[in-house]
Length: 223
Image 1 (cartoon, rainbow, N blue to C red):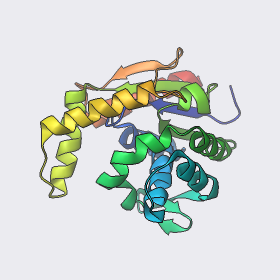
Image 2: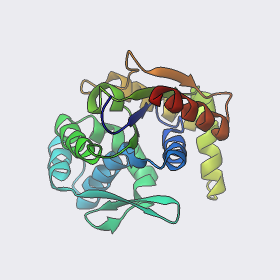
Image 3: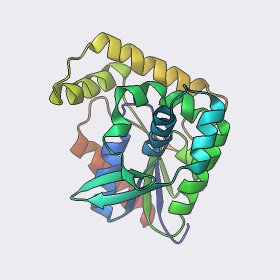
Image 4: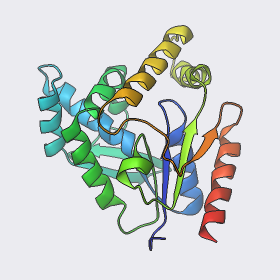
């Protein structure tokens, strides 16, 4: 076991990885690294620089971007080149393009290098698509967090409705299923469960139940 504890949480879009990872990290007093937010930040940079998406533009942006995280008032804020983009990276425009950006080899190489540096010297919780398979294959505990596409669409829809947005749940489910297909079929670091990861289906679990289950796994692993 490494001198610092690394908890890797992977899974498909909308599975609640970030929500759970944040709560687990807080309970354990671990650092939290939202790797999905990093790919969203690169996507935002590509969009803001204009001219449309190309793999070359995405790779160039990833090579220049500086991404940092800061905990403020119980919220994990994402900074792109010194600017707080925590809200901007959650836009529908970013969500619609992020899978293509994340599939670019040079983008993933740049982000993985940053992630490994961030996770070197501290107890850390990371969530994403390839943490346990690529970024930290020797993580102390790997969890593959998932839920049915219908349940993930329901959860995401409630979040959007809470922000005053109108939701077409059938369309939202189809978008999630397409995102799954893109993430699982990409050539570079596809979404898949690591051989030694624990599968945790949260379709019939609430946030406190999932958090408690993972905390118990960590406690068992650290003994």
